[in-house]
Length: 606
Image: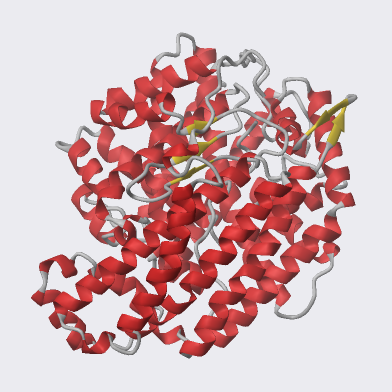
């Protein structure tokens, strides 16, 4: 199945255009000029014919190919992936610009169906690759240097070998994917279609979530209560989506013999389960010295006896609440990128000038933010919902980091450029760190430094603590679903169990907060995705400490790491920096950076 892009930030990413300047919009013509473009019809026709020809040429024959023949087969498969990816990128990006438009939704569904039908004959490819004996595959790689480039792809494909079904069942699973996509679209369309009324103003979900960062506490409370009201009215729909998706996953995992609900995600991330568990344990153990300690500080700053959930992302009382225009946001991020290395600025520049960013908030536009790589012979597209808050500048830095990474990795080609999620967050979080440090250097007063440090700590807590809490929520949800249908109250209870543990005793929870799991897109689109954020943040904190130490040649090594895309395992990628994510102490390095920022904030209280 060719997956659509989706909003990959949690809903702390915000969404307007008033007073923000000239916000850029996508120019999708580098993919296709319109849904009626003759090039699109040509590519759909080519895809159908080439997939059939590919199956006729290779099905049942992969084990008999020599190294040169296998290379030609792999390259033809890459071309098919490229054309299919181009079609689905265009259809998906158009849809996310206006998810409430029936014509765009229908066009996306039609493209998904045509691509799925066309590519069903290709299911044999990975199945037969896995039937090639290890010795024979190794001999092929040694015989052809160009084929050996794909060794990491073959390794990841062959990791699925123990969980492979019969050819007939695999084709059935491939076709059935369209049904799962329909539940995802139901979620997207429901979220995009929600309306919230706050102080007499009608808002979409992005505009309402944005109010949770307002200086005026009464506005934050009104927004939180309205979110709870609307989520409550729609909770049966969201519970149905989660029940169905979790049950579908449980059935597929059971048929495949997956040992856990998380196994498939770990395999696709090319990361060992024990590494993820070590990360999770390190973060959970650090809750008291991270989130609990920080939110106790924030409670005092806000002058409250106890914090409510609408205070979690509140600005500090001394924070400058001015709106940051788009031009200033662009300049801030570009200066940070160029100061690290001019090459990074050169790669980032076309995003702003050539229609590669869609920044404004519009009715029906998908919430959140993402960077979608499209295909390796086009370029990525970045989606934002920009409202001019400091967090929006950081979101820009984050998604632009993804974009730079995707541009650099594109030279690997279609099968090797795709980076596992755990490593895909590296460049984005590093871009945020560069931007934060640049802003911190420019701080002129102790108060400005305090606000910046507090903002960064909150972002890190949202990226590490909040996402691990999300991961625990998903683990509990999927485990509970194996025992039977979950009511909305069942899911609400699971949500509250992880929220209280992760946020600490500084908070009280309003009635209705138990439904706030409903709007997180990752749970529906990509189960267990969320730990990749914590993985990426910990990895980047460790990387940045190497950079800050003045390590010689860091920039060149960093660019080589990004250029590698998915061609190397995380252990191989980190070795040049003297880092190893399989070392349990590795995660403590990253967490100690967050703790150090909180130490500095506490010292400012003296």
